[in-house]
Image (cartoon, rainbow, N blue to C red; front, side, top):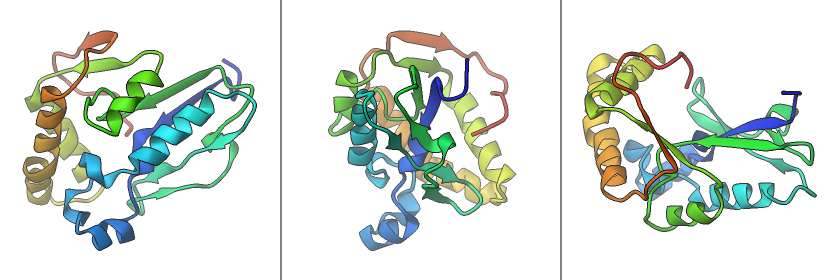
Length: 173
């Protein structure tokens, strides 16, 4: 596909900045639904459906652990974009404001794997970025596992379930 015809808009770019998380007392819950700019994410995807305007979106920089907006072609949806892909934990969540994504996304697929496999992916990712394995385990149990359980208990049916029995995902975040 030619450059600009397809764009990936990751949900992680819509994390609230750490400063805001600290103001809200949510820094230790980073990754939970309430630690995202859900309205900004929904607004960006809604605007992207209107091909007459450019939409710039933030991405998450794991080196600084913050969302960043560089307003470059890698972070832009333009009139030439024909396919917008997004990914994130809350795309199928039926709780507001996330439930509004059902009316915006044409299709939503679910990578269906066990919580045990997902746990290992998450801990491995934290460790790749320098987090101590014990701290990664603690964060998983305090934040990531409750988030997964929330989604599994409150998700709409995806258009497609992709079974992932185990093993590693391709490198990348």
